[in-house]
Amino acid sequence: MQDGKQAQASKGTGFVPYIPASKSMAELTVFAIILGIVLAVVFAAANAYLGLKIGLTVSASIPAAVISLGVLRGIFRRQSILENNIVQTMTTAGEAVAAGTIFTLPALYMWDHIPSMATVSFIVLVGGFLGVAMMVPLRRLLIVNEHATLPYPEGMACAEVLKSGDRGGRSALFVVHGFLIGGVVKAMGDGFKWFRTEIETYIYRFKNALIGMDIYPALLGVGYIIGPRISGQMLAGGALAWLVLIPTIGYIGAGGQSVIAPSAAPIGELTAWGLWEDYIRYIGAGAVAAGGLITLVKTLPMLFGSLFATLGGLRSREHGKVTLDRTNKDIPAFWVFVMIAILIVIIAFAPLTDVGIIGAIAIAVFGFLFVTVASRIVGLVGSSSSPVSGMTIATLLFVTFIFKMTGLTGMTGMIASLTVGAIVCVALAVSSDISQDLKTGYLVGGTPWKQQVAMMIGVLVSGLVIGFILSVLNESYGLGSEQLPAPKAVLMRIIVEGIMAGSLPWDLVFIGVAAAVVIELLGLNSLTVAVGIYLPIHVSVPIMIGGVVRWLIEIASRKNEQLKAARVEKGTLLASGLIAGESLIGVIIAVLIWMNVDIPGDVLIANNVVPLLVFLVVTLILIGGSLSGKQERLTEDQEG
Image 1 (cartoon, one colour):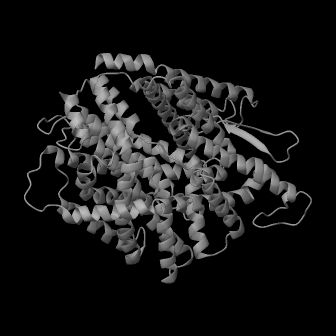
Image 2: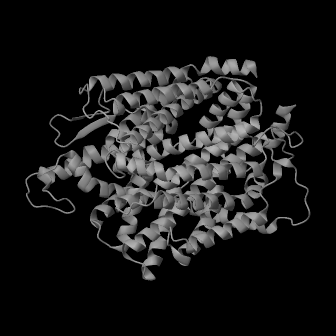
Image 3: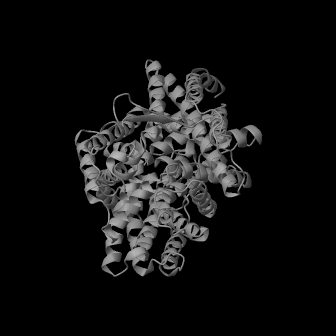
């Protein structure tokens, strides 16, 4: 009977969710809120650390759904799938808040204008609440009316996980196992310093050609999740920088003693790392900026089509009296628009941000425009492919020019511009994630207004702690340092500085722009390759290994699609655990350093063999966990 209803749903007519509107279940409960708060903070910290390290964040919805199933159903014996849906909704708020924050605000720390935790929280909270509020009026149009045309891939996948878990299964153990493994390896390497976490070697008779690898489980997990194609393109960028550009610059400048800006030393005296620091990072920044804008331009037809379709749908909506059932009740529109208006007024006059009326208007305009677009784009291509950074770059370009023309220049103008960009970026990230969450809720039968309230709670909690997390990471590692390079935030800083001061090495930046254009003409994803150029190759190599593991699993299971899906699913859960475990321990180590707890300074075993063996063991565990998907999936099917 249920299968027949779901089949009808796929046609977009007479849709009946997994839990029909006529049935009420426990949903926004104390159990769900407490677990959601805990997971929101955990994934906010984990994604903040990961995003500062490699410029990418990972989805929290499926791991959160699996963990909530394991905790609420397995430990507390609670049987409501709608409670689990609330937990994953709150958790994604932490991920979204972290993404919007670390893509922009670390630039303030790099300017030595360290914001207070209250300022960071204010920026994040107003951006997050705007993201939720601006999406509420769009839910019925995008999620309900266009159910058959906008799949929202992450939302559908999360719904399937919740429904599968509702029928039985032990998938949460994979996340837990990965969490423990990633945390233990991180603690042994960077906590107790039992072995090195970075290995590298120069290539024989190839001067300045350096290859290396960070042996972090989180990077292996990222590679597995994003797959071989994306990880391969990222490694291609790393190889271009470290095996082509750095040796070329070193060779040409080997005999000269003149200093070429922006370096303060002759090229002949620089190592591969010195060449990367003084020259390649600017080339990489130009490539990333161009890649982000190219991604945005490629989506312009979809952008304008989505905007016009959404506005047209809002205009044509019937205004007659409608009786709404439980699964179609949003937060009342009156209160939503009152909230948006109040937030814009607060932004205009709040001394914490000092962006003025011009900045507030820019946030209202770009926020509504890009939230509308982002909410539809993620429905088509998923959150991971949404050009959030490109839309943030576009916002920064316009806003910085406007501030400069109105006389708001210098550091004050740069801070104001970045603040506007940060609020819009957080709003985009949050609206994209809640769009997927509302799709999940629509499929499983959740109550929309309860999900919207849950998302706001998640934003509130994550926003209150993200300032502390940034402060601790900055004092312990340094934002923009080799340990936490914060690539997206560096890019935003370069854009704002370039417009305001015009003091950048533009030749190097334009080389990167030209490289991105060439890469795009070759049919590759210019933004992905550009990130590989910007980051050390040590990051791309373990990500590529994770992608190869995913490729091997898919090849080994290619004759059985159900088996392949089961194995990839188990591997994804294990990889998510690796990321969360290592990232969280990284934050804990940072807290210990911040508290002046003595952390070992010297590595106990300085050779390359031990870290290689550790990384190999983790890789084999990931392979073994993925291959165990067959038996586990069969067990779940029998239980269902």
